[in-house]
Every structure is written in structure tokens, then in C-alpha cells.
Image (cartoon, rainbow, N blue to C red; front, side, top):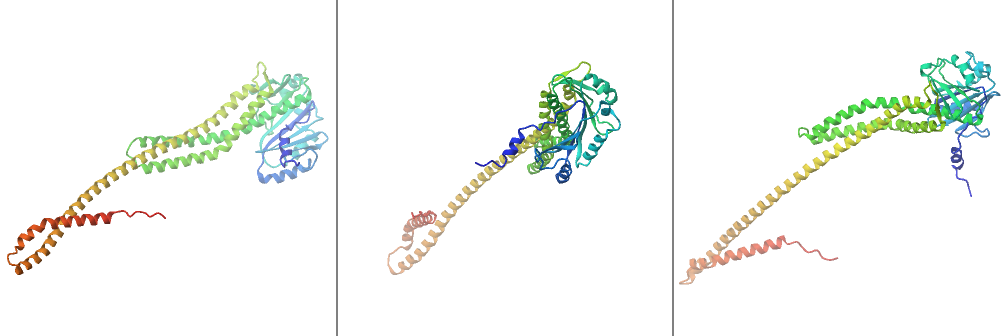
Length: 426
């Protein structure tokens, strides 16, 4: 037996790339990057400096390694870019809020800044032991109290954040383990970060939806105008059909431009909901929770994206329905025209038949007249040789039989000419 060429890849996809076990205190810095296909080579070369592709445990979609003894790096490739996280140990609580980072943190940041791609999200996660330490650090984190989100998640763990960009370009999260097993706590913090990453990726569809909405409105107004014109008889059907075809093509162009992005938004939104359920959020009095924040800010954006997709589908169905109705009307008119044409042809055929019958009658009279005239010459000549022979009486007697004979001959000839020859069997 031989392994399928995709077996290892499929099996690896079934295993979550877990973060290393977090230490307390520690700092996690993560970037979510949008990396263009042509930048993948540069990205791989940069990663090779700390985590070669052939190192044990590395795969084409995941690498891990060390920048220094106290800084571990984890990189993961996604369908739309990459994410890279630095796990910084050996850091004091004061270093977490210091304006100038320690030397090993600055070294790690310098290496990470060399990665190619556009930053979609950048987050500093400060990990502390408990709520007491967290409350001591909070005043120095520049978090807006009016926008502060805080809740317990996964049981005893707690988070604080306002989900706003700071002057250094990072968002800040403060998390406290509160005595949880660090392995379980590390998995929860990873899910918390995944929630934010998927949320930002899902929101990439909102500008696309907002841009598409006015275009759909314009097409919708045009379709309404065409529908009113279809109901009347002023416009020509071919002109209306051309307009509907143009609007359908425009709707297809809009659908092609938004379908990928909004489909991705829908998929990321489902992942956000799954991560939110897995975090088992518990609200804290006086603070908005992750669930509140998501329902208030995230869901309206996702519903807007869904509404744009639904509107595009509805307009496409309207355009197709109007076109079908117009085609049915055109077909009905063509059928009526064909029926009138057939009736006209039938009248013409009957008229031709009558004319033909009239011509046939006149032909019999004419042929009979000429034939009787010829016979008359013969009878008049015979009267000169036969005494007592009355040529005019004889001519009168044969007139009717001659006419009948000509009529029978004409009818017989007509039947022979119009008779369809029988097909012979091969």
C-alpha cells in the first residue's frame, strides 16, 4: 500500500496550530498580514533566518522557531495572507508598560518589521497573573474607559481592551490568568485573539458592500422604470429587451466584484460566532462584554453585507423575471402575427383556387370553340360533295359532345400532372 499524496496535508489540517504555553508575566505581539502572491518568496527568505522551512515540525503553512532564548516566533499561512506571533518571556510587569521596550523585545520587533505584506491587525497582549496586577497596570495602558471592554472568559480568566489603535499602531489587550492552568489559559487566549483576527477579516467586506449599495440602487431604479414601460405599449419590445440585457450584465458585473469578498465575510463571521461561543464569556457589572461589543458593532456590519448580497440576488431575479415576461409577450405577438399570416395565406390560396377554376372553365370554352371551328371547316367542305348534307345541323349536333370531350381531356390531364408519384421500395 502507498500513502495518498495529500494524506499528510489532510491530517495536519485536523490539528489546531496551538500557541506555546504562555508564561506569566509575558508579552504576545501578533500581526495579521495581507501578503501578495509575489511577496511569498521574500516572506519565506525572511522566515528562514529564524525558522528554516526544513526544520522539524515545520510545514508549508506553519513554522515556529526562536529569535532568541526569550522570544519564540510562530508563523501561519492563511488563504488571505499570514499571521505571525512573537511570544516574549523574561519580561517584568513594568516592562509591559514601559515606553522603551527591553533589548530582546526591540530586537524581535526589528526582525518582524522586515516581513513583507500589509498589516491588517497588530495587537500587543499583556499577560499577567491576576486581576490585582491588571488593575495596577490599567491606568498606564491608555484605554478609554467609555469604550473599555472587560469580561471573564473560559471561567476565571479576564480580559480588558478597547479595540482601538494606539499611537504605535497596535491595539492593546490585557489578560489575567487568575490561577487557571496555563495550558488551558493559553488556548483561551489564542481563541480570544482568533476572534479579533476573524472579526477584522470579516469586516473587510463592509467597504465593498457600502460601495456596491448605491450601484444596486441605481440599477433597481432603472429596472423599475423598465417595468413600467413594459406595462405600457409606448416602447418597442426589442429596445426594452436590449435595456434589460444591459442591466442584467451590469448586475452580473456587480456580483462578480463583490461575491468573493462577501462570501469570505460570511465565512469569517461564522468563525467569529464559533470562537465567541467557545470562549464562554461571563459579563462583569459596569463593563461591556465581548458579546455586547460583538452584537453592537460587528453584527450590524455583517447584516449590511448580507443585505447587499440579498439585494443583488433579488435584483437579478427581478431583471430575469422582467426579461422572461417581455420574451413571453414578444413570443405571443409573433404567434399572433404568424396566425394572421397563415389566415392571409389561406385566403390567398382559396382565391388562387377560384381563379384557377375560372381559368380552367375559360380554357375549356376556348379549346372547344377552336376545335368546333376546325370541325366546321371539315363539315362545310363535305357539304359541297354530298348532296343534301346539312353542315350547320351536323355542327350543332357535335358541339355539346366536343365540349364534354375537351372538359374530360383537361380534367384527366390535370389529374396526371398533379398526381404525386409513389415512392418505390428500395
